[in-house]
Amino acid sequence: MSEAVFSAMCSGETQYLAEAPASGSAEDAQLTLWALYEQHYRGFEDVAGELEWDPQLISVRRGLEQEFEATLRSRMPSVPDPEGFEETFFEFVAGHDGPSLAAHVHRKATEEQVRELLRHRTVYHLKEADHTTWVIPRLSDQVKAAVMELQFDEYGNGDPNRLHAHLFVRGLQDSGLNSEYGAYINEAPLEVLEENNAMSLFGLNRRLRAASLGFLAAFEATSSAPSRRMAQGLQRLGFPDSMIEYYTEHVEADAVHEQLAVRTICGALLEEEPALHDDIYLGAFSAMDLADRYAHRMLAQWAA
Ligand SMILES: [Fe+2]
Ligand SMILES: [Fe+2]
Image (tube, rainbow, N blue to C red; front, side, top):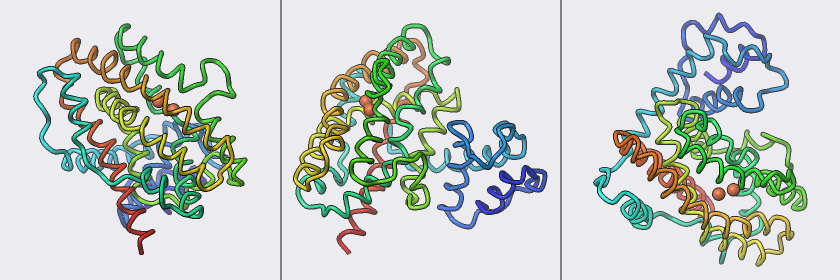
């Protein structure tokens, strides 16, 4: 499928995609979906800009999205009661037990393993926070202002050198890694593609705005403490200060962001639209579950 879709994207001859090509594997489907979404972010040098809204490509994307959304929904455990949302949400996140890559990096990981992890993380961190930006025009004034407060921080408070994505660029460069956008996409395992595609799926579909904000809330609420362990692990291995700084920046920033995301964003959204309650948990659970799946893969691979 990716071969058929990529060649259609490069040649512009998308009419041959009228019959959606069958996907060869989960990786094949997710890589195709990633590339179709990527047209809405930075695009590709060898793909014409008009193809962003090409009906055949959008139709292939829709098919892949429907399948992926059904998969994400099928993985969901039961959703907690809507009563006392904020405390319940924090409990839901705290009660989620998954393997920790940050703990491994903190104490045991080799430099080679951490470099592999950083290469995989480029897929998200080089466009950090962008998926949440899609949601902004779809929100009420109150929720929008709160999302903007968080996003302004992610985007460096007006200073291009403080953008979180840019902090990661500097860390990569000083670590001797390629900081070019998309440079390591061919190395990304299925779980990384799924995580990135879930963010785009929730961000680009207005009806899934609550899932997008729930994803954000769980992501922020599981970031501060692991970021400290990442920073300590990078220090142990002698990584450059700029790479360490990316993570120390997130220790404090995300302790603030989690409160904003859970209370001022998701809490306020629910007061306006209580029917979106379960979708907040779809996003939150997906954020944690997809991180677990990636951690499982990497820890098993490294143990072997
Ligand atoms: Fe960030
Ligand atoms: Fe954050």
